[in-house]
Length: 260
Ligand SMILES: [Fe+2]
Ligand SMILES: [Fe+2]
Image 1 (cartoon, rainbow, N blue to C red):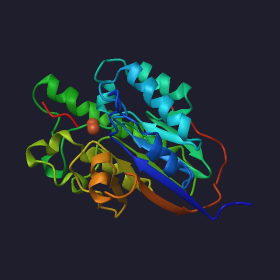
Image 2 (cartoon, helix red, strand yellow):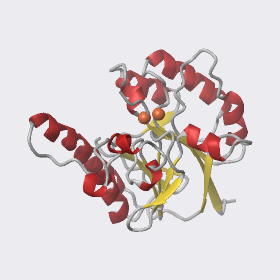
Image 3 (cartoon, rainbow, N blue to C red):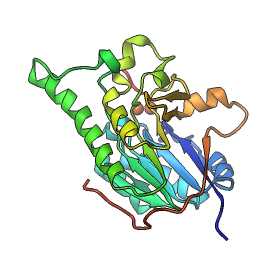
């Protein structure tokens, strides 16, 4: 019998890697109550394949539901992000980097995203080449997100990011680091494709919930944010969606000093 609700659990910024780290109890508890698990980057602490192996082993030993995620800047720290991604994919975790993916009738589009600031404070591609390159990275990530969203034909479309697409969910962080926490360039695709919701991490001291200018809900699910809000239960944000028949059942795949 078809379910009438799909429950998503989301978490980011686990920064797994220290010997004492143990995610199994919390993940086992949450996996028994939801249908899909979402991971919003900074899964490892320093981007080493060994950290990814430990994370993948501990995660998949306790979680048997579909797992979809994106990498974060910490997963790039050692320059071995391709290996980190491969380790996670081989363990059965779907890592999105400009791809679209469909599970249980829900469409997902994911990118890491990038920095550059928000609204009128957005860095502009002007002057030195290095500034233009920095801005181009955020533009490219936004284009990848848009291309992935364009491939989805599902009623519900969920966007996964590591960096924030809006200013509201980084509020609580020092004002001086806002430009490093996300980019408004990532917001436009969310509005254009009317996503059901967007998730991100990276802003460890930010705010859980905000909205794009088109009133799309955006959730900052950095683990420390969730631990602060929900001190007495596992640190996951749960989003429940009414189950809806997809327009198409095909799975689309597109080509794809501050530490947060
Ligand atoms: Fe981060
Ligand atoms: Fe982080």
